Length: 117
View (cartoon, one colour):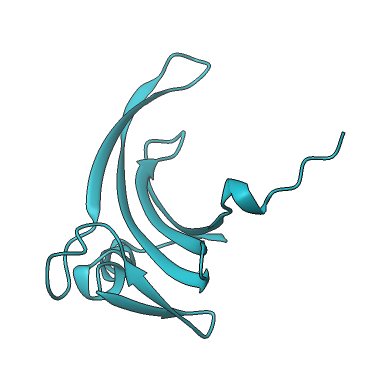
C-alpha cells in the first residue's frame, strides 16, 4: 500500500514520532508492537536512512527515507511484520515529492514447510 502526499506539512505529520514511532500501533483492526528500539519507552523518531540515487540519464540526487518496524504474533511460532516507510525525494523537474507506504510480511518457520518432491 503506497500513496503520495502533496504537501510537506502533511508529510511531516505522517512521519512524526507520534504517528510512526508509537510503541503500539493499531492497523487493519490489529494491534502491532514496535520492534525497532523496542526497549525505548514512548514514541520515538523513525529510523532515518539517506539513499543516493542515479537515474538512466546519470542525474543524481539524495532520497531521505524514514522507516519504522512493527510485529504481531499470529500463532505460537509465526509473526507478521509491518514496515512503515516514508520517502522524501525529488521528481524529474527537481520538485519535492513525498511517498508513504506500508509493507506487510510473514515469518514462516522452516519446520512448518512441507517440501514435495
